[in-house]
Length: 101
Image (spheres, rainbow, N blue to C red):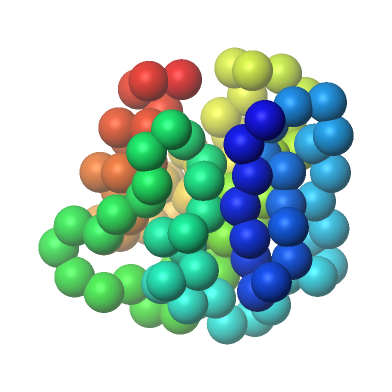
């Protein structure tokens, strides 16, 4: 079972307990917090610049939603993030991770 920490709060990404409290999501999520999230086997890395704070918050929300997905092929929250932020520095890492899912 994989998991990650967001602002000191453990969140389960995979396994039987796929709960995450979206209301507990901080409005400001740092790039370092995103990097520490274990969404896929490999950590998320930036390519091509530093994201805005609103983009980090949107990605954190998408990742938490992904952790609560109903089926293994439900990538809607992450693909929705990619649709909204097509030039995101997180894009390559997300696409690579999704490619291995």
